[in-house]
Image 1 (cartoon, helix red, strand yellow):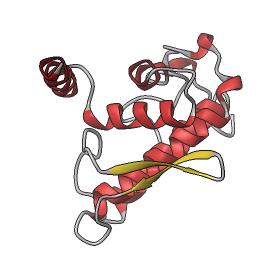
Image 2: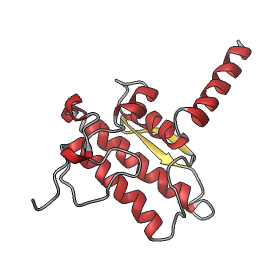
Image 3: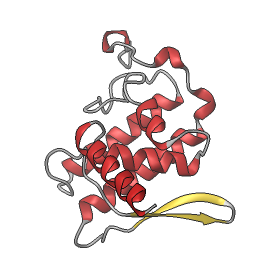
Amino acid sequence: MERLGLFVFVALSLMCISTVECSDMDIGRMIQWVDAKVGWLISARKFQNYGCYCSKNGPTDGIVPVDQIDKCCMKHNQCYDGLVREGVCAGDTFGQSYGYKKITENGAKTMTCTSDPHTETCKYELCKCDATVAHCFADNEPHYNSKHKGVGKSSCQHAGK
């Protein structure tokens, strides 16, 4: 049984390196924690390339979100962008892993970021951005529309037009 546990750990670690960035795995696990209807790996991929904002290096503003899910991604992009702009994080914010703990408060599932806010400020703040988007996705799950998955950026409508 111990070998199986070790195998699963190694397999997940390799996936983190080769197919899914670590923060994607963290977000996926967070989404699954607050919305147990989806598995963590599926949830990490479910929202990628969705709408106009849900992609790595997606825009932060200037485009009309296609729905509430896309709006969650817009706010997430703005959160990450703000961390770089304010000097909290340097360089690429995607792929950084951080510490967090799953908790239940008054029957509601949530997360507490455990990376040290003083010595690992970037990781701590990234965790907060990701926890917020996980809750946003869970709250807006009824708005998910598979027609918005893989929509081309040329289909996105610029704000004010």
